[in-house]
Length: 366
Image (tube, rainbow, N blue to C red; front, side, top):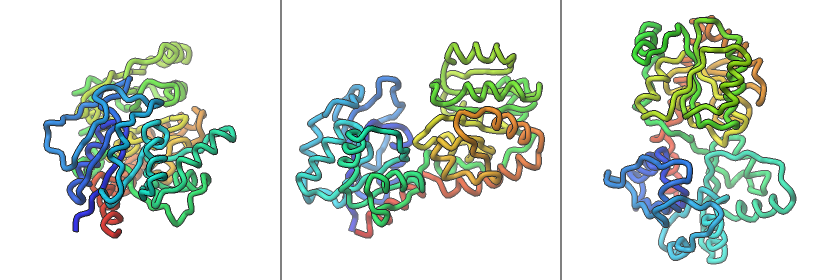
């Protein structure tokens, strides 16, 4: 018998829509979104397309993280769904939903893309424990998220793992691109360098692009650095001038096809983040057979990267290892190819289809 599943989510991020579409093929799925957009971006989703799930929006505008939308409460009734999954306990509306589920005695589950413990005062930690504890099952992306849950009082036996991803199986390249293929794409994009290092992400200090810029000053003259994700912060341009690196290029937000072309052209990928709850660009880079350098603050890196095999993990806020490792990668065709093949072997276990299958298997069991 088909299971009826309810997910509570914040906004319809494209990767979430894709996951829900895959999961909706396997269960009877309803998703309640708090809002359609965020204050800093509008997601390019199309409600006119055929969705494999029922989408309900509490608001047509921007999400208000600290305000409770009480319209969520009528949807939380006993006996309507076989499984109820909450995904954003830190948002006021879903926090209120958790408390309502507890009071009404409705079993529910909690899912996180990732979890990072931070230094917090006693009151903040107590509130977090109140909201996190009490679910029937906890969906975790890996060891760090397991530890996050467990530190807040969740028994390990209640935690199940799922592969977190934004990519379809068909989006994983069958093999690493050849040197000639990469040079062809570089020419198409107007990249004049023999080697190219890529990073993708929003223009935030958190992403560590300043560290990549410092490291780039030690790269060979035939290497350019491209950062895709928006206009640069003025201090980054000043830093590039200070360290004497003039082969730095920022690319504004671009369609997915254009970003894919940059992945195909790149020789190595760097995410020097100071802290990412996951870091889906790591999945995307590995799906394009790129060796990845990221930090211990990137949960995706901690879960997916086998240091020295398919990429490297380095300490946060350290730029010297980035320079050293990039020079080693760019200087060895054999090393890049070996890491590219290892990256593909890893990422094949992290797809939207696999993510949906793991969820459905558990939902159908009980």
